[in-house]
Image (cartoon, rainbow, N blue to C red; front, side, top):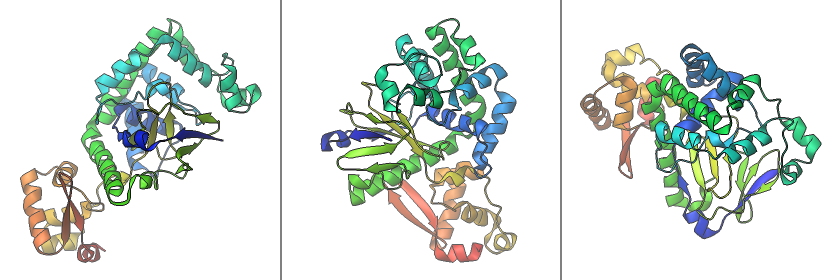
Length: 342
């Protein structure tokens, strides 16, 4: 089964990228259900969430993000700017029309009535009941005051989670997400739009004029007149999330590249530090992926002037290379530097 999104050349040309704080919240919440020891940043956020987010808010958010089949689309409102703010997205969640809230809850939880076409898309009513979950008590309690009160409470919980869990790391998260967007923009410029989805995820592919996303249900999204919205995420590593609510442009939330930029920086080798200086050795160790001066400064808590000074020396001595990508200048280790670190 799959979701098929027919794309004309015109619609593809209107497609764009967006960065969403709520997408990061949803991605990191999934680690509460499925701990990811291989992703240290998710384990760090998981521990921070359990320690810093009020139990009432955390239990509600966890109850709504545990499914591997369907997560309420209202939790990830499409960003209207290149980089959305948590305040704007929380306001969008709170403003979700009650009938849309109820419709999404109908799809998510067992025993609620759904339109016949929804049941048919997954193979019939019996199959739908298998895929849905019983409504957790914390969700039922939040709904007791009506759909509008529910989304207002949910918006507050999402904002609180972001501020207490993700905000301390947000500048570094933005570096990763913007680098992913820049990489994909470069690929499109060099090889054409059809390379856009080449390495998104194995579940996403081009097929005869359409984007096809493997899902446990069948759906044709025939309203992408404003193109497709592509949202990279540092928290979604086990698949992609699809947000498709008529008439809004459909969104695909996909795993970003370069997640190790959010992991603890490797310590600079002691002997190399003695040879070239500990600051320069630290910068070389941090260039496990290409980074800008600003990214290195934030990662290593160094001023931009200090980073620029040492990168200049490393560049002149053949240990780093640099290239311009749009307005960004990105630095990378050379083979000589890799050999020294190895």
